[in-house]
Image (cartoon, rainbow, N blue to C red):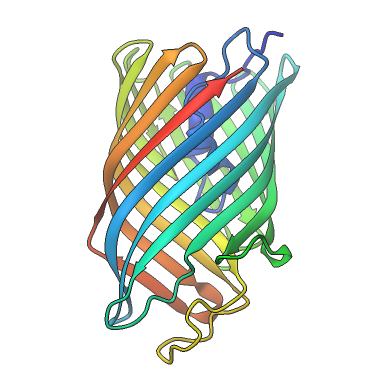
Length: 314
């Protein structure tokens, strides 16, 4: 079965890069380092693992020790061409973040694990020679703590984007999205971005959660400087530190996580159906926000990070 893509690869990257932090399914799509081959069935498996070093945490002037983390993510997605001008993407995704907490003057009021399990669906439609539209949703469970998934961690994310081709090398995107589980920064917001193929070897993507400059050495190897945001919203059933008197009660609420990273990213297309992506850089800032309880932990200083991901197309 031959799979035809409506949008060029630069535009598909733009769809991801232009979305604000609340658009979880598109952020996960960034791990799709390579589209399916021309003669494939449109199925793609992505697996990635990463680790970030320790940073100190504070809430106001109060210190709360240190945190470092390791992350694992996996997704399986299927692209379906509905017509010459429309397509559908369906996927399953799992993400887990483990927090290693180092108490300081105070114990750290964070859960030791954050995890999500989602079903993602998006639909793209070419409207005119210049305009296209992308709409989608992600439904699933997002839970903090050592126990399994909770029904109270069920959330629905929706998004919509308008895509405009200025010319064959420049694309713009404008839209927005909504997350039912979030109550703070991740709740609702606009999305805007651009993707520019400056030369056959140089490309620039500007937007959120990813902005970067990439140089293509060959069909198999590219290297880029990338700034990106990593985020998520999770339901907290039990207070991770119930005995503390220096904070409000943190049970039956949500935790919104956000960090900003800057580093180098290398993509190596080992075969037409198998790619590898590695990143190394610095976590510039971290934030853990119990927005409903008006309690927020922020990092001091920076931390190194490293990630390795693979993509297999079928």
